Structure formats: structure tokens, C-alpha cells
Image 1 (cartoon, rainbow, N blue to C red):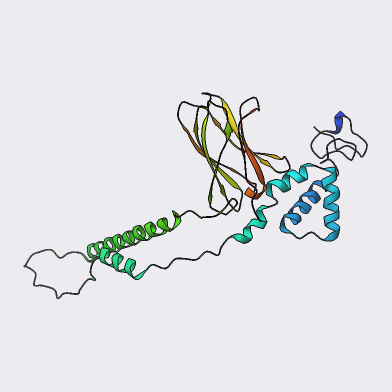
Image 2: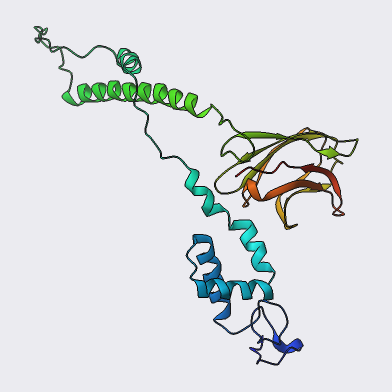
Length: 269
């Protein structure tokens, strides 16, 4: 059971997070509405909707609570990157594609006059004829989906081109690493954050490693972890921080020491 605490009870009995008043310890402590107000101000800052009074209030909160800057570094630039996302356009199949799909589906059925039936021969039920026509139609749909899917996949396989920070573009990076390691790495900038693609070998078998993205202000943001093995490393990790905010990438071992560091070029605005 935790005690709610008063403005001056900074002792051990003040209990859980945010339960005490100004004297209860950490910068996030305060009345029951302070945490909610804190999140409101951060959300308004992310959306660019702070009034002058709220901006001053947020500045006072940042001075009192350094973790606000960490949250803004992690998520604050995400919304600003959304403006560069292009409008989705549904591709129209070309005339050549339509012709090939029509050929796969076969010629249109032609109505024929019923031929004289032998006496005593059973008639084919109407339900069976409907099933056969349904199977043929399904085959045509499958063919259309296969051809259309391959066309869309071909469009999606073309990577974006551009310098560091270009959305969707693959950015090769170079690590200064331990001599025992061999690392090949790339970054991909997204609207929601930064993707790190790692391939490498030489990591100690069974040891845990962590990939950390470091901002220009020194904020460290974990992106993921992996175990060393005899097999070659091949993985992708993500962090909710825009490429423009990342200054370097580190791979640390279980002791927290960096075994590989990559300094990144500045993203031009």
C-alpha cells in the first residue's frame, strides 16, 4: 500500500510514482493532475499546437523534468516527417496486362443448342454446371491476382534514392569496430523512426549485445538486442526516433561497453 503524501513529505513513506508533492523526490512527482497535464503539453508540442502560455509552461516543465526532452527526442520529430509522405495512388493496370489476364482466363463461353440426348442418359444437374462455372471464374480471379500482385511487387522492389534521411532510401554506414568483428550495416529512414539493418560475424557466442541510437544531445535510445552465435548475424531493428535526430549508433556488450561505433553524417534539411 502506498501513501499519497503531502507537499512536504519527501520521506520513504511517499510511495509510488507521482504520488508525492514537490518535496517527494523525482521531477515527475506532484498532484494527481500533474502527470496528465504533462502529457497534454507534450502532445500539444508534438502537434505544433502550443499557445504562448503553454509554451512557457512546457519550458518550465522541461527545466524541472529532464525526461521531457528525452520523450521529445524519441517521438517529437515523427509528426514533422509525415508531411513528406506522398499521396497514395492506386496503379491502373496497363492494356497489355489486361490482355494477358484475359488470355489466361480463356475465351468467353458461347451458348450452344442442346444436342439430342440418348434415351436413358442422365442429365447433368444444373447445380453441377453452376459449380463448374464458379471454378472457372475463381481460376480467372486467381490469375488476375497473381499477375497484378507481381506487377505491384515489382513496383515496391525499387528502393528510394537520395541522401541520408531520405524516406525509404538505404543508407550504408561504416562501424569502427573490434578487430574480431566483421559488420556490414545500413539505415533506412521512415516516418515513424529509423531502421537499422545489421549483418555480421565474430560476436562472442551466447553473449547479449544491444544496438543503441544516440542523438546529437546525447540521449541514448535502445533499438534492439541480439545474441552472438556461430551463425552470421542478419537482422533488422527499429527505434522511434527520426534519422535526422540520430548522430551515431553503438553496439554494446553485456558490460555496457561499446564494441562498435558508427558516426553518422548530418541530415540536410
